[in-house]
Amino acid sequence: MEGYSILVVEDNPDDQVLTVRALKNASKNCQIVVLEDGQAAIDYLFGNGADEALNKLGVVLLDLKLPRVNGLEVLNKIRSSPRTNWLPVIMVTSSDEPGELLEAYRLGANSYINKPINLREFTDQMNVLARYWLQVNKVPRAGSVRKV
Amino acid sequence: MNDQLRWRYWPIRLKLLFLTMLVSTLGIALVCVSLIVLENRTYRNQMESELHVIASILAEQSAAALLFEDREQLRSISSSLRQIETITQACVFDAAGMLLTSLNEPDKVTCPDLSTAPVMGFEANAYKLMVPVTLDQEVLGYIYLNSHLKVLRAHIQSFVMAAVGIGLLIQLLLLFVAYKLQRIVSHPILALSDTAEQIAIEHDYSIRAPVSGHDELGRLSATFNDMISTIQLQNRRILESRDSLERKVEERTAQLSLANRELEAFSYSVSHDLRQPLRAIEGFSQALEEDCEENLNDLGKDYLRRVRAASVRMSNLIDGLLVLSRVSRQTVEAEPVDLTSLLQEICDELCSIGDRPPTEIHIQPDMAVTGDSRMLRVAFQNLLENAWKYSSKKDRRRIEVTSTSDSAGAVVKVQDNGAGFDMKYVEKLFVAFNRLHTPSEFGGTGIGLATVYRVIRRHHGEVWAESELGKGATFYVKLPHSAEQR
Image 1 (tube, chains in turn yellow, purple):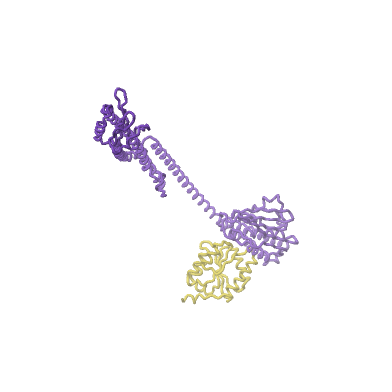
Image 2: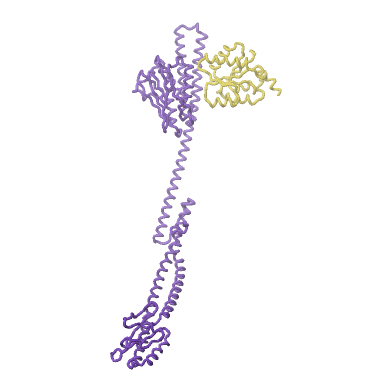
């Protein structure tokens, strides 16, 4: 279970570093894949070698506001394909617009969190998140879904 | 009585016809009556003179017989009167007034008694006449004649019949003429009335009434047409100005919605883009503190703490501005709000996060207002937080919320016994970024009361405050029951 990886889609380098630091604090052994924009995420999940990636993936942390292809579009794409629609997706954002919150859940987000300013709070959040989605939560593996 | 039968409901043609016929009937009736009266008199005079002639002839013939008192002769003379059908009685008297003979012997009683000076002339059914019989100016006797009036009656009767018949004929002729002539007057009136009705029903102000002649009716039609032209012109102007107003409203709406979209984009930027560098500043200074603590001296640690405190203040400012911007652009729903529960929830939250809850919190039960519950929550949260904050340095802290209500609306009173403020700065109280306390006394952003003011103004309400330094502050919120919301 410790072997499952977390995909972090985050365009801001500062937030990338802080997120990785918080996740490493929470779970030393987890593998973290960091991608910079929505298109890169789509390529990673649907392109060459996607099967292998999906097999190891435990949860996706998706920033809402991304250059080129935004977070909600990536979420929509994930939910539209039977290969990926089981994937736990957590929207991570610094905005708290009620409209976006609603839209994220409408498109099938599993969770929605606001990045807090305080680093300790953020670290606590990441801790809870990694523990729940990588250790407590169960997901159908990509392979079993694909046969359907 | 049926309304239609009343004079005021009669059509004008009928009225005109009726009046014309009434006048002509009166005229013809008067003429007929005068003719009848005249004829009656003429006929009577004629009858009177005829009888006088007969009586005079009779008197002349009887003079000798009276002189010699020859009764036989007198009887034969009077008997000759039987030829004349109208005479019913003839009596011959001597000078002393004694009846000598009469036409109808058995009917002697119909002869007058001369001793009582009988009345002569026309009576109800008869005409009576008495003439003296004279010879060389000596009265020898009297002759009395009585004539019935049947012939006169018959004559007058047939005359009346003829007059009425001719009168009716003339009436019929007049009816026909009047019917034709009333059109001259009624036609323009009817045309005007039809036109007015048509305009009223179709709202077509381009219709005009026909103008006939230059009399009062012609002037009426012309004036009516002028009025309709004026209305038509005014209508056109109203429509034009309405169209231009609509265009203006559309333009303004477009400008406003553009401004609103820009404002939304701006708030989004504030919420997302401003927070991101802030989070980096806060995050990395915290990471620096945690990961590299051993490399920092005390001064370095103090600077780092100040960086972090500043970023927390900025974060609060951004949050406050976001709330202010949100309450300014959200649509205001009007719904009944259970204010007591709402305040209780806020107090519970404040109690759970605050370090020391107030000694006494009194919230009046069953307070109800009308408004947008989300926005009112923001407003009262700010007011309660202020009461909480500014009373925090007192030993016995007391916060009280009460309300009074009348037909216009409710006034909610939020009272604390905290630090209060100087009333001379009351003007600055609700202006954003204006603070009446230094950050070292009480922390804050200066946006809270501006947000309260915005929320209450958007509910068409009012908010004001009273205070005395050191004795506490009272905030009043007046909310109308059901105002048209902006």
